Picture (cartoon, rainbow, N blue to C red):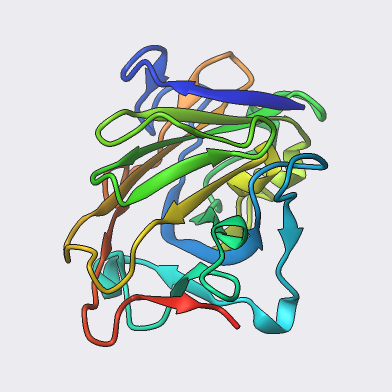
Amino acid sequence: MINMGVPALIGVCQQSASGGGGASSYSYSGLTSTTLSYGNQVGSGSSPIVSVPGAEQLSTTLNAGNTYAYGPSTGAIFYSGSNEDRRINLDIGFVADVTSLAPADLPTDGNCAITYTITPTIAFFEIRDFITGEPVGGEGIPTAITITGLNRNQISDGATLLFSLPTIANDSKGIRCLVGEDAPLGRGYDVDVTILMGDGSQLAPTNQGDARVVYGSGDPPSFIENLT
């Protein structure tokens, strides 16, 4: 199911990692970023969404070890030709330690959900909605992206240290970097996450607040002009 991104209500119904859904907890070890597609809108318009072939994708993991900073040539602005209709859409998602997140504490299959709250810290990064083909939110505006209709095994198996959580592309959203060499270093976007628990609460990770993503390299730039 698609739940359109809307400004988040920070702090509402959000529990700490030790509260809600039994004794479950989790933390994330990093955030994956992949140049997954280009274009503006699913199935219509002058620039429909097109998947980037796997062999051409750039993928990186942002984590505490690299201070959540995009390194040299880890993203792209356009797919080819500096064409405005071929702007790259980044897909992001957390990799989490779910060894203490009991599947039995989650809602039943088909009723699980995860919410990403993304806040661009500069206008050069924006969130795109592939259904409307338009940007969502803006600089300094928290936008909630909720992925619903999930099964328990898409959220946790209760055993894996590096478990890939569903990404924002599952809700037809993406992130764009609008400039490359001129992007100011040390700015980007913040990402928080919560998981819906069986008792209706939202469970935050124990390290909520770590994922403060920044553009980290000026020369060579973090984001190349064209992917191909």
